[in-house]
Length: 162
Image 1 (cartoon, rainbow, N blue to C red):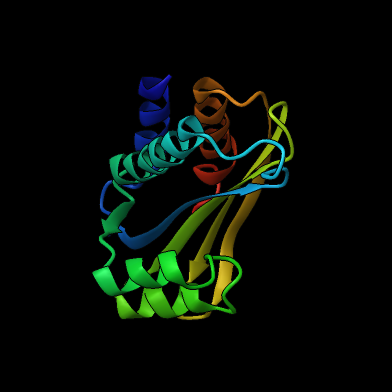
Image 2 (image 1 turned 90 degrees about the horizontal axis):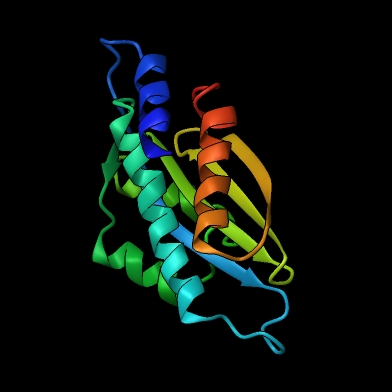
């Protein structure tokens, strides 16, 4: 699954393009039924692997250089409002990191059968979204999360440069 994705990515990037510096703020799970179905260790692991899958695919494309987060920004993400709900902090983080783009992923869990994966990318210079896309997930498994992100990247993200 990953090899065809990387081949598609490589074919879509011009050979002499300067990679965009991208700061990835992570994956967040919005568990709509946490009182009845608390977030599991498996879901926490999926958030980590989904983030790695995302940054690995973008870095492998040659079109993006992943910018590491500072400890200060990591702390703000953990202790402050989440990305996407912080009134534009994402662009501020991108400016502080000298990033050309800032990205984050939010997975909404309605139930173990119905989930939704959302990818957001902002241009810190303009504070405008350059990419917003969502895919529905049926089933809460490692494979369903991975395939959903691969589908989103293959069919939407790399078709349109962010």
